[in-house]
Image (cartoon, rainbow, N blue to C red; front, side, top):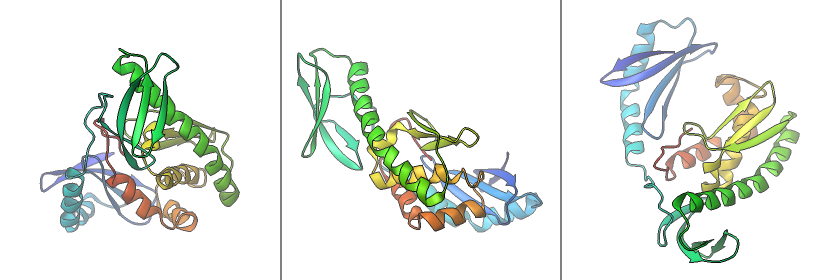
Length: 237
């Protein structure tokens, strides 16, 4: 992958087997990327970027203004997100098992007095993981039937730069734990995105056609995902 600079904006350039130029500006920091057909010369790519400067800057301003979570302290009154909604945390001392309970607009975290931040974070992470493990299998089953593909395995893990990823040969998909904070529709969008890679490896015109065919509203969901609050670690897709 190469890189060009236009109007002090660094742009990653990747040449691949596609028919048309594709431009993307990605959260959280407004990274710019152009995918170009293999035979496209550098000057044509530069002129294309110049023609899109106004749009690029608009997108970057939008990401710069995006709401961000500060680093979580896991204290009462702190905001936490789950399934696309904002909750206020209550820390409730208990001598029993650590657990999480949703109550109206509150997320109650039951932990032993004096519990460390690390322990509190692990209890919330387990809560998120359990939720995703309930939601992902039926989504996979639904889209296996629609796409006529087979997912051999899925996993959930913390990822710093992607909402999801996949291993095409192993037919395995990975989902970012942070998606438990986003809406169920956003989770479904990522599951569909990764499964479509079993039909088309690259983000090319064929891939986009599959997205349009199977999940017509995917652009709206992508926009929703990118506009929702991101964590202090700057998750992105």
